[in-house]
Amino acid sequence: MRIPSDFLLGAATAAYQIEGAAHQDGRTSSIWDTFSHTPGRTWNGDTGEVAADHYHRLEADLDLMASLGLEAYRFSISWPRVQPGGSGALNDLGVAFYSRLVDGLLARGIRPIATLYHWDLPQELEDAGGWPERDTAERFGEYAARIVEVLGDRVAMWTTLNEPWCSAFLGYGSGSHAPGRTNGASALAAMHHLNLAHGIAVPEIRRAARNAPQVSATLNFHVARARDENAEDAVRRIDALANRSFTGPILNGDYPDDLILDTAGVTDWQFVRSGDLEKISAPIDLLGVNYYSTVTVSEWDGRSPRTGNDGHKGAGGSPWPGSEHVEFHPQPGPQTDMGWNIAPDALEELLLRLHAEHPEQPLLVTENGAAFRDEVVDGRVRDSERERYIEEHLAATLRAREAGADVRGYMVWSLLDNFEWGYGYAKRFGIVHVDYDSQVRTVKDSGRRFASWIQSRELAG
Ligand code: IFM
View 1: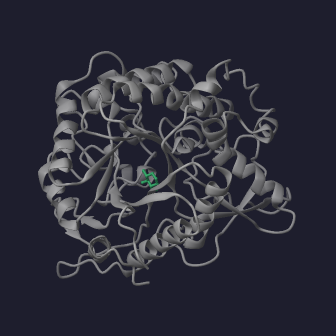
View 2 (view 1 turned 120 degrees about the vertical axis):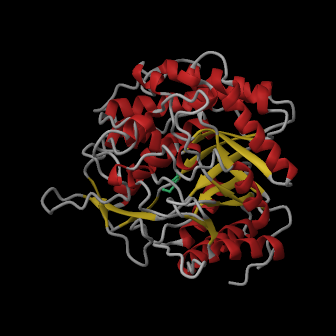
């Protein structure tokens, strides 16, 4: 299978998951610092305090990216590193780190793709109410403008938010992500203010950048399957809460009617104000698509024991406000170390669905990858399952493109093993292994394969 020459191949990471240096050079705490330092919140009490120590190993990691031949590197900017406390002037030392990163990428011919928010809200903004408060969206717009003013001469691809579903519904609904709150109404208000933050930031980015920027938002799509013939409504509900809650306002300028009805018992939606939807639906150049696996759902019969296994770590609350009666079933087929099923066809289907619903919207696969239990043996990591996973999903992406979806590239998650949020360091997603004691990096077999595809622009499978 040919990989078109204009199809971008790269790898992705996020600040809190790899950087470490959590309290260095003026960085203040984010909600993930607070959350991960709270006993019982993460596996083994793990935190991002050191992570993959990328902050101190920047040059070597840049060389590593170049050695893999990456065409693009998708990273996130830590808000509390560049704007401590989430308001006011930028922190020169924090900005200098990203400036060096961007310069280092460009010097190596790697295109930088910067995400402004990958979950690390400054703790002070959470103390002021967090995403359920409208003002957080305003603060985000200000931060976006300031950071694009200093990096927007060299970065041309900007993503406002990564996976706002997780920020809203895992952060404020289930409580399994920072800040760990469990209130359905707050989760829905957070959802809207994240959408609004995106909408406020888009024109700020266009204004502050000095190079015709490509602006995007990245969503994590839930591809829901019906367990039986009575499960269509359950599929519709999950699709509304997980997917259309973001594509609706961002791409269509409206929240779906069924979502508003499904959640009417949870919130009165007064958080949506006149003018918000116009802002949120400002045109974007790319829609970022994160995809890992599918979910199988049905209506709960009210009697049988519930699995509650929706693929997200439980923490007491519900990430599905108003649809708590939807039951999630164990996924058939092979699974990754996350317990997520492997279903590459669903990625093709998702990309084609997005293309059918939004034919003019260019797409970019901004995350796809898999955790497996890796071991370094004689200096090598033989991760054939990950190799297969990436190959099958990249092939599915290319098939969708051949069938007409305007997919511009594929970013593997992740460049490095890293802090997998509530799962701490127990799960390894990297195409490069990280020994957390020595911080030694070992390119896994999957990393070598990925590099060979970039070089040959040919997929064997
Ligand atoms: O590690 C995360 C990433 O931060 C967001 N998308 C999913 C990945 C795997 O869980």
